[in-house]
Length: 214
Ligand code: VGL
Ligand code: ZN
Image (cartoon, rainbow, N blue to C red; front, side, top):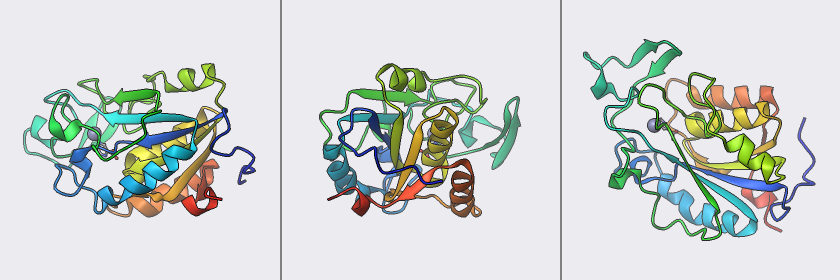
């Protein structure tokens, strides 16, 4: 099940996908993930090893459908045409400070910043496909056109945007690894355990950053 580690970070066929390292997901942010900021040095170290790096950025318009504030009664879950949507505090509003990538992130050779969740009526945890499971962000096409067949996924949050991105990377045919110690989770109602189960079943491999530092 585990793909061979024949795709090392500096292989031109490999990309590091850095998910949502934004202030709103850091301690003190609108949707804080515990110790999210502790990932900055780990991801910087990893980033330096990869030839290809993509930065994903959650990037919602004001009044986005995933915000509890957009719905009367502030229910934690609502049903939308595409299924059940978890409602969140307002976060990563386009142009706001909270939506900015952490300034300590130091991966100057990253070539693409992919903004997602821009559609007012559809959420997008995944950097590949929006929550309607139909609208594509174009990331698979970008990677394929660049001759990339393998991705390593890191960042926030492990049980939401990282997991959905990794699952969709697998579905799109990429060899996919999640670097566990380069992610932190929200862990809502068992979502972390579930995410690891779903990823294992889908053939996403789990490794630690130590396996890549030689
Ligand atoms: C995320 C909830 C809402 C994430 C984004 O980055 O994991 N989670 N929007
Ligand atoms: Zn979001």
